Every structure is written in C-alpha cells, then in structure tokens.
Length: 123
Image (tube, rainbow, N blue to C red; front, side, top):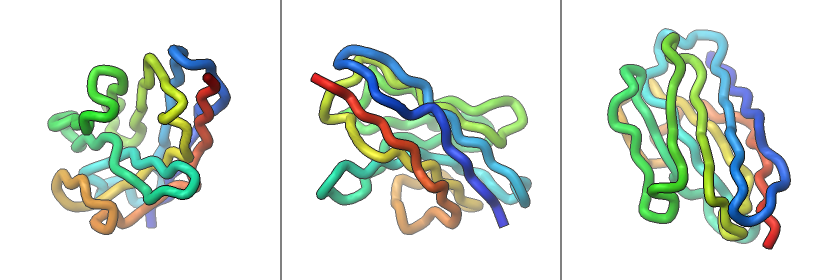
C-alpha cells in the first residue's frame, strides 16, 4: 500500500501564491506517476497536473498553464504544486494521486489518493 499526505493549503487573496506538497510513504517503489487533481464545490474532480518519476512530462491543462508548476523531489516520493496568480475559481480541495502506470490525466487510472487539502482564494 501507498499512503499520500497533502499539505500547504490555506486561504489566500486573489493574485497570491501557495505551494502544496504531497508526501508518499509505504511501497513507493511501485509508483511511477503522481498527480494533482482538484474538486470545487458542486463540481466534478478535475485533473490539474501530473509528473512521472523521472520528472518528465509535467503537464498542466489550459486553466492553470503558466500559473501552476508541478515538480518532484530527487527521491521521487514527494511532489509539489506551486500555484501563482491564484484566482477565486482555483478554490477547491486539492488531491494528490499516485499510479504505478505511465503518465495519465485520467482520474480512474490512479490507484492511490490522499485526503485532500483545501485551497480558498478570496476576491
């Protein structure tokens, strides 16, 4: 089993920044791809960014491109999401996910999930 613990969420004003962290523990040697998803109130969970163990293919959809950056530590067991120029529409619970398989943006392909960390952006 793999455990994922997110941290770094909070309340920030429009235009501010936050850095989320996700630490993986347990049988982490199986993990290849890690990702961030988010779920706003009343909306479905959506993909934000993903990165492979080698650090390749960081990916952001258009809604966050240029503002959010995903990275991974050298050991490969912790990922980060640097969020800049935050907007009220970025308000959501942010979830970390991990998968043994190749890069994917599909939520149902991820085997492990964290409990989530709340991000709130005030206008």
